[in-house]
Image 1 (spheres, one colour):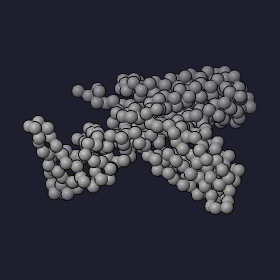
Image 2 (cartoon, rainbow, N blue to C red):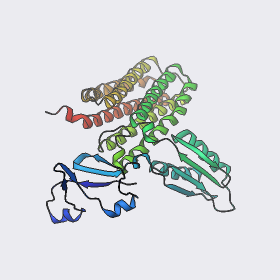
Image 3 (cartoon, rainbow, N blue to C red):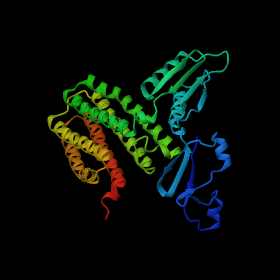
Image 4 (cartoon, rainbow, N blue to C red):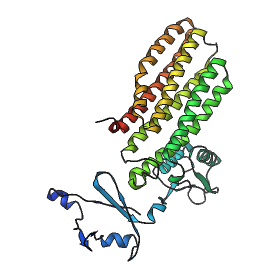
Amino acid sequence: MLSIPIKVKELTNKTEEQSFDVRKLQVTGGSTYILSLPKKWVIQNQLKKGSSIKLNQEDGGVLSIFPSDSLKAQKTDEVFIKVLAGDNPDTVIRKIVSAYLVGYNMIHIHVEKQQQLSSKHRDKIRNFARQLLVGTEILTDTPAELTLQVLLSYPELSIQSALRRMCIITSSMHRDAITSLRNRDKQLAQSVIDTDDEVDRFNLYVIRQLKLAIENPRIIKEIGLTKARDCLGYRVVTKSVERTADHAVNIAENVLLLEEPVDKTSLKYVEEMSNLAISMFETAAESLFRLDFDLAESVIQKMKNVTALMEEVVLSSRKTPSEETTRLRLMVESLKRTAEYASDIAEIVLNLTVESVLT
């Protein structure tokens, strides 16, 4: 059930007055203020005398009211995705992702009567749901239909918890990618590539929660945030973390393609640059979880050091064969992008915490 926001403030013109259902406050008992509710809303929410009502004071002088049991109810709308025999499985997957992100809890993937889902469709959907959709289970698996249900509710896994897990995995991926470069360990490099799915699944979960919060502001605190405006900042952060993980994958993929070891001088600079970039990323993440303005500022100050190290790597890499030089520079570019994404996260933290340093 949807809440009806009631703005309590002085109306300044006729246009504003006409946009609201204006009601006057009444006083009873000398100290209790009473406001009547629209009859249509009461009937719509099946309320009666004695029904419990909950109030929530939000930013901007907005007072939301809703039935007491509505917080327990999540969006339960079902969506049906029709699949044709010639449909590309990736197209079907994208439709499922869109339905998941906008908040549907029951997703039916079906075909027309007397037809069947191909084994290719079914395998890809099953694997995708199990690997990338947090809290999703397969309820129905028949030749004609697959039904996915999202069982995990927002209080069970907060945005901070999911995002912290993303950051830990991403940092580990980068360290393993550089270790695989140093030791020429292609098995470890492949492991980095495979781990990217873990980051992607938490990324989709965070986006889903943020979309639900934007649609229904009263759950903002339930998902671990404090204000509605935090949603935009966290959306940028989760995208930055996801892209940082992608650059760890880029490094690992280039390790797999290297045919000759990197010379010791170039490797030394790459490792220094990697340590700095990963340190910046981890510090930026910590500044977010602690909402620490000064810690975030320290991350941004380190960008000039990243640029200097990158120049050293480029100079030293001229001694290596041309193809190996290309691979090395691509890895260095990914490290630079990692540092830049760390700086982006830090800037979001500055925006979220700037009021704490203003006088």
